[in-house]
Amino acid sequence: MLTFPPHILVTGGAGFIGSHSVELLLENNVNVRVLDNLSSGHLSNLPSHPQLEVVVGDIRNSDDVHTAMQGMTHCLHLAAQVSVANSVEDPIGSATHNILGALNVMHAAATAKVSKLVYASSAAVYGIPAQLPLLEEADLQPLSPYGLEKWVDERYATLLGSLHGLPSLGLRYFNVYGPRQDPSSPYAGVIARFLDRLMNQQAPTVFGDGLQSRDFIYVGDIASANMAALFSPQCGICNVATGQQIDLLELIDLLGQLTNCHLAPQHLPAKAEDIRYSCGDNQRLSEWLTIEPKWSLKEGLSELINYVRKPYFAHDQQINRRA
Ligand SMILES: NC(=O)c1ccc[n+]([C@@H]2O[C@H](COP(=O)([O-])OP(=O)(O)OC[C@H]3O[C@@H](n4cnc5c(N)ncnc54)[C@H](O)[C@@H]3O)[C@@H](O)[C@H]2O)c1
Image (tube, rainbow, N blue to C red; front, side):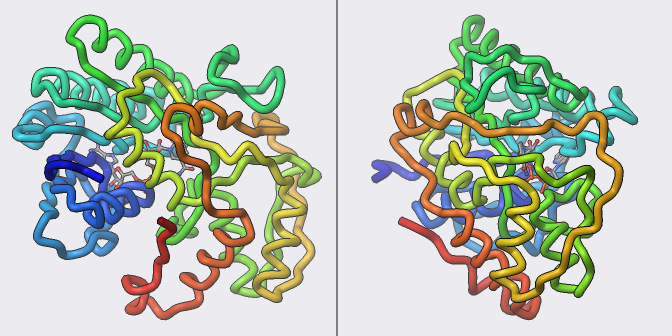
């Protein structure tokens, strides 16, 4: 239970993970200010709420960030260029968002002396795992500029902690899925894309044999981890993962059962850069933040399927939470 209404700046709050996090914070009587440039986020993702303020601005602009940080007690930094492929094609553009933009946010948070900065890192920092499940101490060998940028952010956050006493916690999210992930985006997660294909009676496409596995975590669990991290005294780096993996063929089978659309996948040539297996250790998550993922894959997929099947205008009323 919170003892006072904190004021939290959420960068990227109009996006997929951001909007779920904002909703959860508002339900817990927190005052929220969103800073978002609406490049992939949407105002329609956010509720109209007396404790919510939305500022359209860009993390690459330090004036926007310093102005938005004024009066804030905490910051949840999620805004990013989120495409791995884009980061390969345009590493400078990507770094401008993901390193310089992140540094603007961290510097403003340190200057404003917020009680806590929580920021989105990613499982992409690990690269090809030497062993599974991935522990936070594992060697980091990112395979993309995006993964490297997230790692640089972690190093900056640690350094600003030493230099300015900024308390921060970086969360390495694994593969996040759930309502509001846009399947039409070329960067959408594999679950959003498979489901979109199945709902349109099209075979899902898989690169290679489909035996590559991932640790899929429901967005509601990510929102819970974000909120717990904001009010936790723990600083450093923490995985946000389920600790379980499923391969893509099993995933397609499960989606087929839940949607009653059984379509064999279409196989395309394997991608050389595709990581074969991924799964995060979540012991630190349960020790530091005393939370466990509450949504099984089957439950989270069912929730997503319900959402996708409802007409657009009914979306606001139907996303369930777990206490
Ligand atoms: N979705 C995943 O599976 C996943 C996994 C690991 C890490 N992450 C990280 O989580 C965070 C949120 O990702 P998401 O999946 O919700 O993506 P998203 O694209 O839905 O959200 C990103 C938000 O940031 C905003 N934004 C982008 N650039 C901005 C800028 N320069 N200034 C202000 N706002 C800007 C976008 O408009 C959008 O609302 C990102 O940092 C991402 O790297 C996501």
